[in-house]
Image (tube, rainbow, N blue to C red; front, side, top):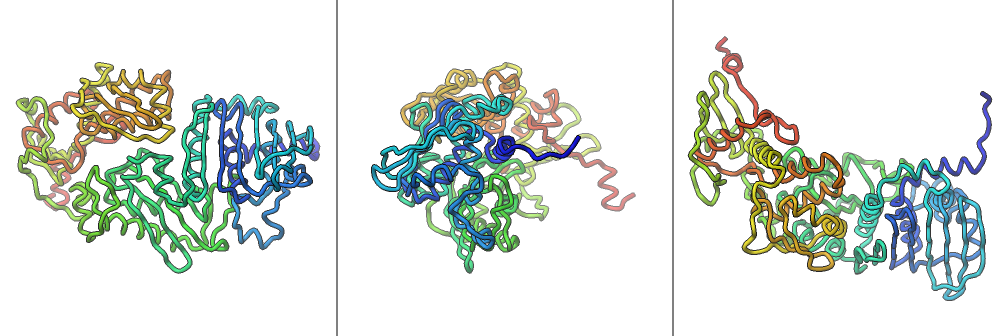
Length: 571
């Protein structure tokens, strides 16, 4: 086999594959171009999840006719001109790859004008210019992309369903809108407006427009300036958690990025406040000098590298932790309250205080039975099987059990998860549907609202009776009894499962039961009376797999007599 030079058409397709992965990639590149064109209003509309058509309109400065064809030439750009410019990037785009990459794998039409009524039009298909002509239009640019991957059917075949692709577009536009509160964004899918932001440069108003008022009220303000590095934004209260990092939106120099360094800094800021598989939500802005960050380390410019990684890590960790300790964060109330001392963190719940210390504290082995702080079981009369004795509760999180010559430390949340999951899985239905005396009203993000509307019957099958009131409002009228009191959290988690899966997915039911069991189970930090601990352990030991919770995590750990004697040097 002899070495040969690839033709330009094939080179363009290969290069396009690095930049354009799916419809959301097209939207991202076009919106970033609109932002760089100083637009104050950007309108995005998609059909068929963006597979059939994507239209992005802006009121930016537009282009001249002689620039149009050049804009679709690879590595043609107005944003950098020399090598030093690469180390002083102030725009979102700079490589000159986006438009030619899109045009190489789709049919593209661009209308643009830099002066009112004196515009131009270009039409391109598969990288080949079809037509360039004058075309009167308002100042700004409109790009229409259709038949994505029409000339690369193998790539098109690997796209997901139109609903899934639409969700990716929504997530992309959401992040871009949150990164630019000063720009008004609107997103429409199949001619239905999904959301519109005010563009008034207020992050809180943008969050409310995109993610909902309920989401905003669970967030805490963060702000810190250290030299020429600034940090500001919103992070979630410790009682508002997510099951993944999807809601951690990080913006460096107004560019949405993924950063393992910043993720770790957030984890450290919440250390001791969250459980192992819980993640906070965040919309964080970091501003650093352009020469202190490298944005040219990823084909899609999705990752960055900081010159002073330790300084950035410490700044984020300290600023977020300080924000959490300065606010009164009672469940169900707005986070924008008065400041208070660091000791207030302990009042977020005894589980947070317990998890945040490495000291072994043995108080509350036999906790008081304060009815306001006790989780109730329907039947408190059942006793433990022979050979098991409840010794007490440690840190209001672990039940200590004597089992012959072993000492068991049982995670009360994980054990109760297993009980609820097995019960629901056995019946293939929620335990019981609990009508709410006072219906719960929620404001949901547009993406979850669409999922909810498309799955109302599925949700009813899981015990949720819901009414859609309008644009992004829903009323919960009944829920599975296991999650009564945690209606909003449970519905939110089930919607996350539905976003990630499909109703025809064979494992979807198990994922929903797992989510409901998690939200309905006793929380760490809940005080249990002795008879309630006995009831919990009796139900738990009767499960087929009491060794693990539905997520696969161990429900208990064992300390044997030999291990104790060895540690105490008795043997």
